[in-house]
Length: 347
Image: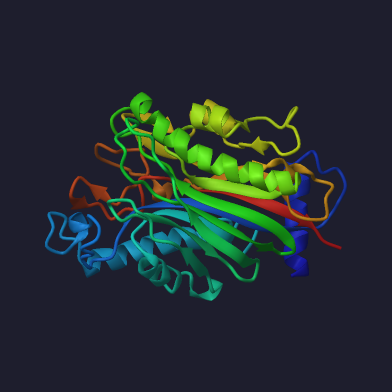
């Protein structure tokens, strides 16, 4: 452990001018990954999963499912290991059918040594896709969790049911933290027409943030997900009130570290040769105090390694997706995962 902490300290001294004196830090990594249609192969009559069954046009069978598990687990196993060999402390996930597929994922040989645990609730989404939270009990101890219903306004995209938001409170190596994982309504039907639906999801998150801040203005909150909006979209800047800069950020405010990525044309999902940055991890101001004894924010990363990039075909240079139409593409996801690294001083 001492060697590991020293290595982190050297890396920080080398790349971050703000750390002028030599100090030792312990890292913790928090990420999010849209797993793109991570279904099992069993028909659930309560949801519309017929597209992902053995007798469907996709011929979604056990062989394809197990290959997808292998690929997803290999990505998750590598995320965050540049600073912490244990990888992720927490990982929010989206587009998963149930807790069964998550438990199969965390038990894969690529992840088995991590002892990852699962928090999941079924959502009312008609396709049966939910969000979930994976955590490493070495770093995170859950205290409470629940699902938060998102009431969509009539006429936004039509008043149908969408994914719940997962809320979890727990201890991150001594810090009390609040986690919200979301997969906000899509842009189907057009960005403008669908915007009220995402504003509704943002409103649910904002009300929770306000309630937590009313109790403790220094609450450590993490909001993560496939938000189907960019950092500059109104759902994030106006409804949620997330800022792209720390300058002038008030106590209780929210910081979105993805603004600069987006302004540089860097994204997590591509559509019609244009990049969007829908996958985000947003932090409350309490994470930004570098003088504190608990964890503070260090940096944000998009995990876009070369093996995750499509090399040929109509989706060349896009994230290497699972499917090309109804043909299995031997890919990973149509989204790149993201993560943030937190640091904590150690003696």
